[in-house]
Length: 466
Image 1: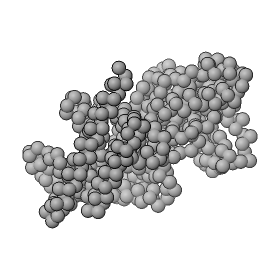
Image 2 (image 1 turned 180 degrees about the horizontal axis):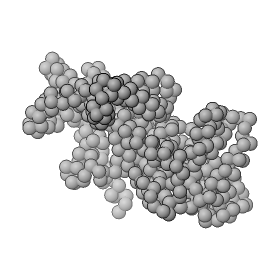
Image 3 (image 1 turned 90 degrees about the vertical axis):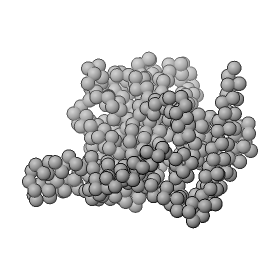
Image 4 (image 1 turned 135 degrees about the vertical axis):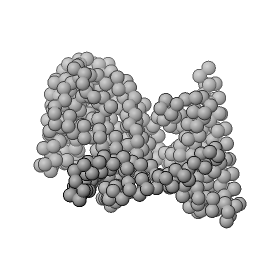
């Protein structure tokens, strides 16, 4: 992530810098990888308005603030400022309160002050971030955005033409609720505001609508956007089954490294192919969906995971199969140690998130915030106990082992889950060989149908572009 040491970059105060450093550490801990695309599109100085989709509550702000080397002034719902302590913290990090009709219908007039605060930040050459959808949500699309971002941009453009950079930004989570998943932060091309200025002076409402549409399109271009919720279910199912096959093809047949594979582009290609077949061959889409549902029902009936069936289809080389049990045996003491010293700070935040998160988009934020408290508290207590029992040096060595053993234990746990799934499928093959063969056959047929669909779509795309 950027270090913020460039002298041309908008200055960051110590408090914000400290909060960002803490956020970067916990994001590194919580996510397997944070990929950033086109950070160079974000100016290092001058007024900027970021328009961001909002899939994962407070984590969205952590991510944007962590990857940008400049201080970001977020527009935050006024409901958060009701708590005096939280309000003091939010103002210290530069947050600007805005009031939504559903939260504070009697305070809507205060949004004039919010606009003025945004313009003052722009005058100071700062970055302001807004979530134009107005609320966080779990859908695989950008919801219809509000007009606030366009109004802020046009009002400032009317005052200082050409000064403001309007930048769409997309956040895409591989798995919103999963620990050690991947996330993509993608910066779009700056959106021109000046072409809407003449219309704004003559008909402000029409100009605001036009710029709002441009912002919507710019945000959608940076995420995997699916128009309908029913379509989302089908596309997610195809992704879960087929994306690994596409990745394997890129790696083995085309020699593309894992770091070079653009997962957003891959997911967007699946969406484009789905939209093509939905328009031209809707019966084919329905047939594939019925096949997927039948295969999933069979998996659920025998409590088998798809990854176990996939692994059975493509068995690893013999040396690798012989090595895995030895790794499991030799790694068990490290796993046991890591599990013992990290069990409480790992499971308590997860349990708390499951019990208190009111919706899916709250889960990861609740878990991350609980981790930020639980790990220092439990690790501190354990280090203190070792220090009191054995002395300073053993306590220091013990402290170093805590994060390392925790990550090793987590990886071991994930591997054990995969092994358990493969063993369950192996037992099923011994007891009900016909069922196991049917699972493998149905998956093979699904993959063959998806492969045919991919080839047909690529042929049609080449034909339409020639």
